[in-house]
Each structure stands twice: as C-alpha cells, then as structure tokens.
Length: 341
Image 1 (cartoon, one colour):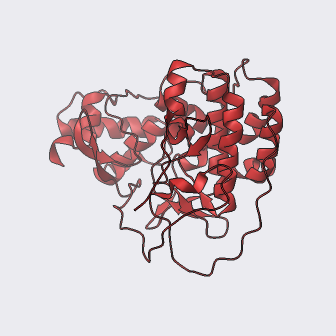
Image 2 (cartoon, helix red, strand yellow):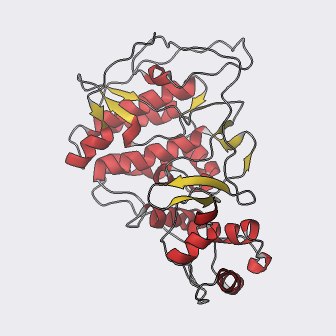
C-alpha cells in the first residue's frame, strides 16, 4: 500500500484565479528546492509546469507527475519524446530520438523553471504568441538568433537576470549561466527573500544497475524531507515507439480522431503557406517526405520555400484537393491520413 499526502490543488488552478499570486516568489523558491532535490538524486523531471506543481493545505509545494522523469546516466537521461511545448527548451522541440527516447539534460528543467517563473510573476509567457504553436515557433527563432527574448516589464528586477539566465537559448549557454540547480536555488531564495534551505548531503554511489522508480514517485520531491520512499523493479515497462520525422506514429486527437504525427504537433487546422516557418512546416515536410513519399520536398528545415510549396501542390493533386500549395485543414487531414488509420 502506498500512502501519499493530500493536495488541495495545483498551481495551474491558482493561476487561473490569480494570474500573479502574491505568494509567487515564495512558491518559486519551494519549487526550485524540490527541483534541486530531484537533480541531486540523479533525476530529471522532464515536464515541469504549473499543472505538475501541487499545493498542500499548509501552503507547501510538491512536484508531481513523474511520467516523464528520467534517471541520469552521466550527463544525460533518456526520456519519452513528448513533453509540454510551452515549457520545452528549443533544443528539444525537434530532438533526435532513438529506441531509448530523447536525450535530455538537467538544463531542460532549468528552462522550464525560467518559463514557470515568468508565468507566475507576470501572468504571461516570456516568448510572444497567442497560441502554443506560435510560442513554439518563437522559441525556435530565438534559438536561431532571429527572435529576441521579450521579458515582461512587470517582471521584478530581482528576478530578471535569473529568468534570463534560465532561458538562455542553447544548452551550452544555459549550463554556463546556471551550472546546477543548487546555484540557482541560492539566487532564487535571495530574490524571493526566503530563508536558505539546508545543504543536501553527498549521496553515496548507487550499488544497483537497472532499477527505476515507479510512477508513484511523487514523494521524491517532498520539500524539506530527509528520506524518500521508492520501489525497485528490474525493467521499465515497454513503451510505444515515439514519432520521428522518418517514422511518423499514430496518435489520437480528441476532435479529429486518429492520425499520423511526426512530432506531436497535433496540428489539424493550423494554416501554413509559402514564406512561413516553424514546427508546423517541419512536420508537414516530414509527413510529405516520409509518410507519402513526396521526395521533392527537399530539406526538412522548417522553412516553407519553393520546393515545399511544389511538394504540397503535388500532394494536393494526388489527394484530389485544390492544388493551391496552402496547407489548410483539409490538406492536414489528408497528410495525416485520418480516414485510414
């Protein structure tokens, strides 16, 4: 039997009623402490966001939902291919994926914490866009150096440098500015005006080879806890193969039903055309090239140029659609072969 503490709600629910909670800085200090404990134990959370931060009756915080958590093997861990795009660093929006999943580093959690801090302190995301897709495209452009980070003027001065460092555009830059969550925690506690947390003890080297934590590892991030209860098993459960550009996978959309994805965009009605760029363009290129064999699409680069336009026209003619070169809802549906999976 597993006994867990009862949460009163999530940070996500709090932000719906109070976009900039007065207790935000103190909550962020607790979240950062929990993240530091997790990294110190050799794990990456992989999906830090308001919905995965639980609040207890006494006002303390617990990190939750460890479905994406992964144990570090040296500098990297291997995690499932999908996380929440708004909190995913640019280098993982279109990652290389093998049979073990996506290679992820602790700096991915640092990026997510930077986004989370900006949302909690200002009520807005740090990158422009009225939708997840638009913000994801902005993050891609930011990593390429063609989009600037636009921190809200409502972000307190004490937090501005912290958030900017957490949101460095690449892993290398992020690791240089935030070498570990222990250093980040000290900065966050100072900005929040909270008491410094106790230093964590040095961990002994692990004496086992392949044990993993069960999904009920919510107890791992108990803030201020001195012990963690966990269960071991020999092998992790088998998972479905994640989608890649070369190997699109079937997924279920609540509105449109089953269809193929080459990157979990879940895009069915987002219109893209010549001159556009971003993750939607890249997924269309992947589906054209690797699901439908339209090789004249050329490079899968996320830019809707003349070759991509021509490939879309070719596909539309083949599918009996209006051959205008614009990927609209009908073309997306045909690309995803919604009626055939």
